[in-house]
Image (cartoon, rainbow, N blue to C red; front, side, top):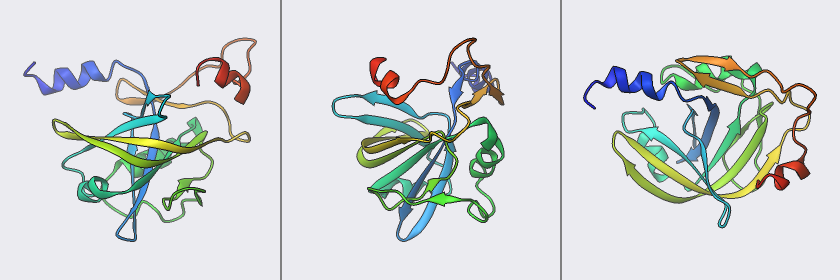
Length: 177
């Protein structure tokens, strides 16, 4: 396919969750909004996301030994937009949490956090695919369980299923997680 706009629109027809990935590189915090976060494997526990090769912090992502993933809620759309931009200070006023197993900060108020060590990096055309081994995963029990979703070039909200509650930690494991 040669039409980049048509392909981008086609990709936008796939609804995705939204996350902020963070790392420390040479003592500097780096962070980006991604919709490419994905589970890869349960054994070993692996996740992935992609970073554009033209990203301002690309070289830092290429060498980061660990990274954090904060899965965003609907209340964090503004934060997602802030970390999606390459200009300006992304960090001022952002409430951060310390990670337990890595040096990278985590975004406070997220639905879920993953702490990962770099496991692999692969060519993905105009992106670099980063694979991380999950060292720790925590769910925010006090957060609104409504995930931020990206679809058709815009943030969307999911309506909760009727008569159901958010999956408990035990139910997550029952469903293969």
